[in-house]
Length: 199
Image (cartoon, rainbow, N blue to C red; front, side, top):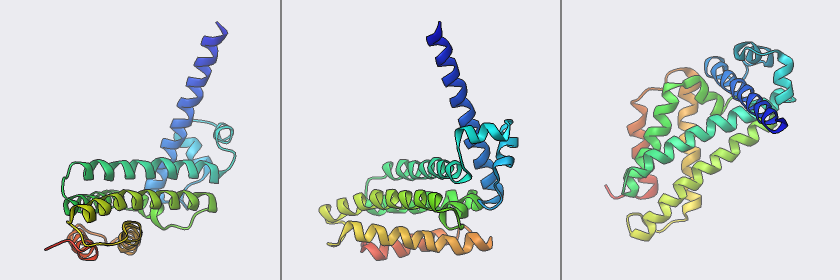
């Protein structure tokens, strides 16, 4: 009997934790990191503020987890889209289209994930996921070099540079609220040239 009770408690705590993260994501998507407070998250999740602090001792702990959750969703979406393609040029195009398209669908959240000033613990999560994007692209670049689709190059260096360029190209327009879908073809053309994709 005690075992079942413990399992129910664990399930309830896990559900509360997920509600907190979902509520924080909703607020961040609407108001950015600066517009989030633990009290607002608690209210949105339908919990007492103390309950949030039981799961996450500080705002930085909460939003590090929120950034981890949101960023992993984005990396997974990009990876799924690229996996549907066969050639390197098409895979890289899918990365750009998916990354940029999703950013344009939720510009406030994208800006928060990419560039909004945040606590150091949250910024550390941002760097983890930039590396995840770079590793994904580096794999495609290495395949392209091996197959002859791309000229010889350092896949890690190229991928890191491309992630930086892609993020930087989106940050300004997202912050100014002027990013549009017409940005995507230009980004794809730039990245293809940078990698040496044959026209």
